[in-house]
Image 1 (cartoon, helix red, strand yellow):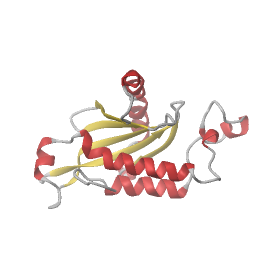
Image 2: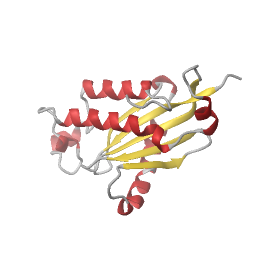
Image 3: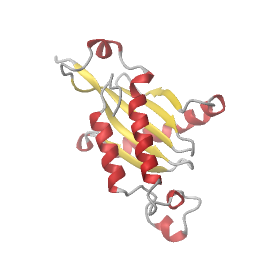
Image 4: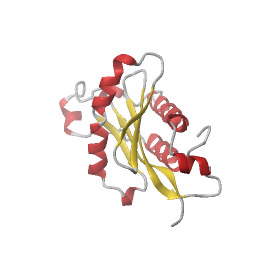
Length: 176
């Protein structure tokens, strides 16, 4: 059997009211969207339980190991938006650039920091867009017309950047 390396299975952006803002699956045609929606929802209590202990660092590290293959890692922004990356530990065939020690030992929390930083930069870019109103995407502040529609992020630039981050990430990368 060929050696496999970790890869991103899902990236979820969750609003401060615990509403899903964006979910990307990797590869999208081989993943069940509903399954990952449930997985993302299951980690919200972990964020809440760890919140009083967190002060300076936004990295929540390993939130939970779903099974022997999937693990969920979390990051909290200053605005209360949560980023969750689900990693498939056997997600792709290993290449010569993959470190054998990473494949054998699994992941460290630090392996995901470049991906979280890139996601945070993409989200900051989204917030800097004068046509994006974060309150439109909150179920508590959206008006009735907006609630009837979607509270998902629809910015093509943001969605493409999330896709790029999920496809480019590999353990050991220093920046994305």
